[in-house]
Image 1 (cartoon, rainbow, N blue to C red):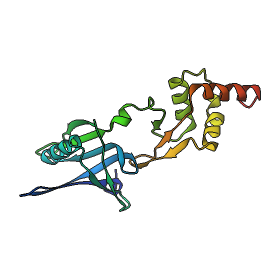
Image 2 (cartoon, rainbow, N blue to C red; image 1 turned 90 degrees about the vertical axis):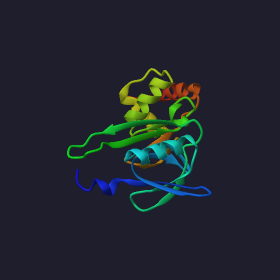
Image 3 (cartoon, rainbow, N blue to C red; image 1 turned 90 degrees about the horizontal axis):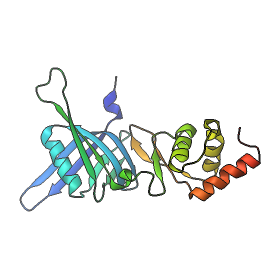
Image 4 (cartoon, rainbow, N blue to C red; image 1 turned 45 degrees about the vertical axis):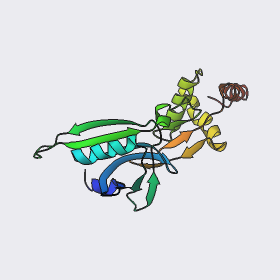
Length: 191
């Protein structure tokens, strides 16, 4: 993978106490968020840096995120964020690289809060989620038309991200989804 460093962000945590000032900087390989609310942060660095970032996430700290294009944003994961740590052993290195994925409580409840994050803004993904989560009888060939209707109603909202192009999907209650499907079938618009 050439020029991978150009696709990475920079996550910075700065803490000042009476006697000390701490500044931790790690590379961000992935990020999902809206405004100042981060939903997912994937970072890597050495053991002590990742330990400090993990502690800061649990303390509900604010971070400064620099995107690959140079834009800077203040973010936080909020209450009850979860952290998952791992190690990556690279040949020729004495110590492994530490990796951390921090997930917000809202992302853990993905789908149950009336909206969901889709990894790609594609009709096939959105239709698969709608039909599964809402329990709709579905035919894959309906995806383009139903998602086109949702798009026209402004049900997709883009999210800020590093490493992916993501969006929220906000469907209406189940009764609306069934009404939409029945209406489209009656009008013979669905294949």
